Length: 505
Image 1: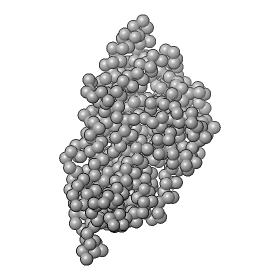
Image 2: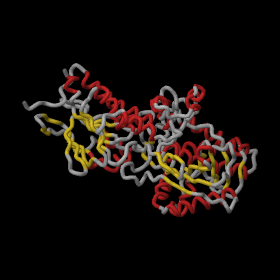
Image 3: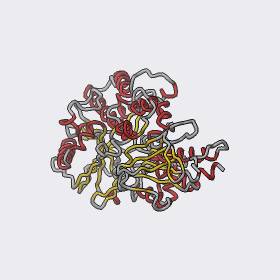
Image 4: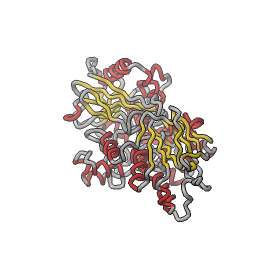
């Protein structure tokens, strides 16, 4: 009886990213008849955003399937839709345990215009990898011997480098320490944090990796979104429909029924609902929580929203007529020789922002992309970069590459960048566990409102920020959409469930 009535309940999903799409698919396939997605922009996919640069397909948003193996639903769906290269599908590829850091072949260049050898720089790479692994172990052990990941790495690098490299020349030790500054900036990009000093050490190990060598979509990540959208009932999504406020704990009558929630849209439309699944990015929630929910978030939930980290990681795509890197090169590290003091932020953002760019990944295969690099830059420097005219970014990138290669003639054919911080619906890139956060904060983010009472589950929360171990990922986002849909399915399947709405008849 309860399930039959439940299938008529009015469910509004806010946001048509993969989390919202996943929730809608699970609910409609289960038989829920009144599911609607409200999307602020004119497109589906959220932070999955594929673009064009000349004839090339590029990913402005999500780049990889992290851990493409059987436990990853994004991989399984992409395989089902035939969206991946054959080599990504091999069992060998799925079995590789890379721990979140692919074994890329590097080229290293110094700010004095020299190429650095892997033999010279290897000890720094090994030391940094060792410390990252150790840093992830504190979440299991409990306790926090240092206040942040940054403080832990810096302190331990200084101690261990002094012991291990004492037989090497001072110049050799110095350039290795400078490379560790570059690797700190890499880790800022990986985590979406301005500095590793903002990354909590105790919670660092909460993020879990899946086996498999990270892979990309030959025809673009949006192919996954397009395939998922085809499975939704037609007309379920309303585009250009931002939500200004979710009014919960209400009693609103419409059509002889009473509803506990009203979703107020930017255009003034008021949509009554039994349940709302909110899938907005944490960055948006941080900025708009004061107006997005009425009554406001309970204090414990609000404080977790404020404590959790949400930062910016941007890409700068650069195309060349000819490569200036080796054929087998997969990543280029830029090493500033004046950064041996282990820094991951610049002293003057407006003047020195380009120093935050750690280097580039190489778009492969060359037959598909030509000679295209993807530069990576995180933090406040990245946010400032977004405000610059494109020709200023091109100028800075050109001079950077000429300086590091020692070749004054290299000229990019074209440059294209992402601008996630100034996107009004995301306000950044993705979630990280900031200093002072713990697993409890993620549980608080995911907790529905209210949890009990006659009409529970009025507002539910999904999105990458609400996944306890896969935050910041596409598979994390999808799994949380499924989780919240499952919560409603269970609610109406339970024998003691109240009917979703009370009839006035």
